Amino acid sequence: MKASPTLIVPAAGRGSRFSGAGGLGHKLAQPLDGSSVLECTLRAVLSSQLPCLVVTTAELAPLAWRQLPRRDVLVLSAGEAVRGMGYSIAAGVAERSASPGWLVLPGDMPRVQPASLQAVAAALSQQIVVWAQHRGRRGHPVGFAAELYSELVQLDGDDGACRVVARYPGVAVELADPGVLQDVDTPDDLDALGGVAAPRQATGS
Image 1 (cartoon, rainbow, N blue to C red):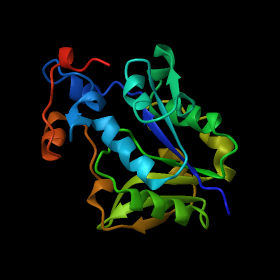
Image 2: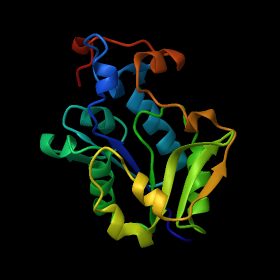
Image 3: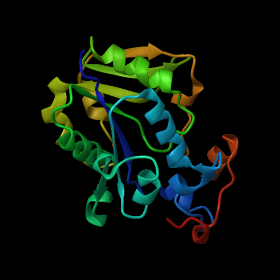
């Protein structure tokens, strides 16, 4: 059986658009569906049965450890975490260098469906770059074939893998899942998903 690509879940960003709104805690630690935003995202990841790696910080790692073994959680230093989404992706790809490809799913996408992750993973077996799409709008995850390893491990900054996606012909996987578009950047985003923003002192580990 052909090996599956690894789901890289970047979860090390500061979430400044969210936490700057009135002293709220980190967006990934916000309560949602009886757990947290990050845990809801990881629930879908685990249900997809794809191999995964969460790239996060010491502050948020305990949320990931509730569902994943420590070998599947890469904890960045404070200095590494501030280097942005691109660096988190690069670190995750380097950590899973033997994978036949990688899917990138930000940790703030708690409504994505496991079947959507599986569909993008399946499409990656035939393409070099693929992404989830809903009603013509590009979303996540975004998949990269193993041939792009040398470019992915050089990523840095806040643009994620946008320049890699722009450089290669990619294929959209149209899905009936609005969750591929729904992230949590602001308290209003969380409210729309049925969560309630909590103050910083309520987040904890």
